[in-house]
Amino acid sequence: MSETDPPGLDLGKLRAYLGAHRPGLAEGELGAEVVQGGKSNLTYIVTDGSSRWVVRRPPLGHVLPTAHDMTREFKVISGLHPTNVPVPEALLLCEDKDVLGAPFYVMEFVEGTPYRTAAELEALGAGRTRAIADALVDTLVDLHAVDPASVGLGEFGRPEGFLERQLRRWKKQLDGSRSRDLPGIELLHERLAKAIPVSGTPSIVHGDYRLDNALVAGDRVTAVLDWEMSTLGDPLTDLALMVAYAERSAINLDFVSDATSAPGYPSTDEVVARYAARSGRDVSALNWYVGFAFFKLAVILEGIYFRFSKGQTVGAGFEGVGAGVVPLVTHGNDILKEEK
Image 1: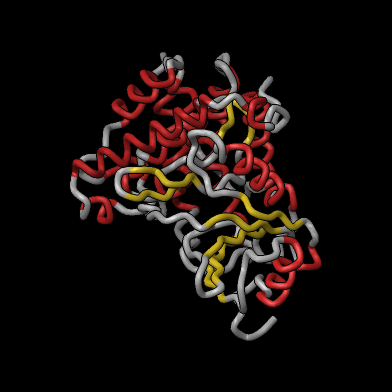
Image 2: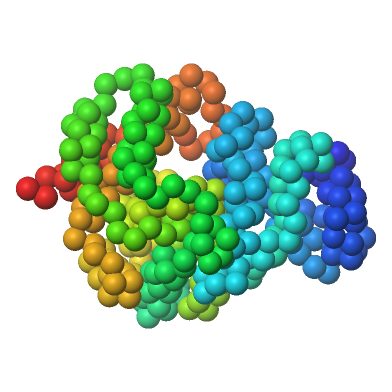
């Protein structure tokens, strides 16, 4: 690698690989920049001076290939590209670790803005903010309407028993990264385990669907990004996570996007009503799904706190993560209480 190459991206090797496997795609030497904001896989914008592409690869030094599956991401955006769901065109997958030190893929560069803050939306005005939020919901409906088998994704996951497996998975994750007392978390898990709802028709699930995982141009969603947690399962888990993220003020998590508090952004009830009306899905058990979303977020944060407390995570912004766990648990329990 040269001194000008971004971490994890040897531009000379990438250029040679593109030349061999996609002749004519890139002309001349490449330049690149790291896209900031991602917490997991690394994303780069690569250019030859006239065209741009995006390269995705796992984080440096990762040890769990299944958690950063480039083939899986490539497969889902390849399948969805011909549908109404806006995704970048998948151009090239490299599973040879000798090229960049890890598998990677190249996709089309899509114009658009990932809105992360209320201030960014406020500058657009309440009317446009409402239109963007509505488009986000409608895009989720379009995703959940795709027949997985018709786009080559019929074997992308196991929808049967999806919620039970998800709950077991996140409880196991909690047990493996717990180093302190977390009031209420056992109660939250027990409540969830006792009342697992019957899932409706399964669909492709994004796994982390929110405004700052999408690109927007005008009032239109031009691309949904970050498919690393996608699978086949219960679509209401996507809707519930959107609802959970919108509760940022109640759970006081500074690192969660505050975009949903912008003037014009629809209320949770309006978001749920629009989704239900357009999808035709039964959302009567949504409180369970939102409670589970808070449990999952609490486990993720506890894992980050555990690694930070052991000196295994470096960088800014991790110090306050641990304080966010119990409010998530409390909010999850409060929502499930409403079921009684």
